[in-house]
Image (cartoon, rainbow, N blue to C red; front, side):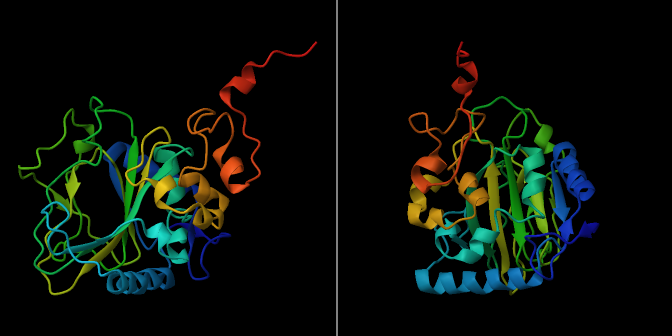
Length: 289
């Protein structure tokens, strides 16, 4: 992995260089997916794994009662309210820059959750993450999602299954049908990145151990987020976030217009951030004479 040290990386992490970031982003655009090997420092991966177990116990999290989420799969949603370790996930320097190139820097966090596929879980229905959005296909990327491997991902333990080339299809999959797919196998600490129109699904776990991942999902800045970040995260919690993370949860303005509050920047109005962003109508002001 071509990499160099960078501010913001954990002490034992290596940050991808610009050429490697560009290469991964281009692969997502053309092939629909990429795997960033060894993207996350082992210490961070282990901390996430331990804290997810803590949350499962303290919150009493149990598997869902539906086949899509999985009856032997444990999921924890809205992770940004559950501890500062999760604040490092959306802005990770080996992941966010790739997604910014697939979408654009005005993107938003759509959701942040954990997915622990337990033993004997069956394969998830093949789906596309954008298939409930009423846009003709194919279309430019509006969703770009990532899966952090907190444990090794293998075909046997339920690695995410991908249907290559389907991001270019003119339709979405039928959830009741089976499709040819390949496992996105990757080592602990690696990250799968894929565009929202790629058909995929969680794999079946045929082992006696859990397959644990963190699903860090992003969407275009003009799209409604899957999890309501502005209402789901208390403002006092958001105030402690790094400024970039505040922008990603929605305290930002897209293209000089989308997201303002009475012509004011939400970050400045609600968080006290120093923002001098111009809105579209500021460019139309008549020059004084």
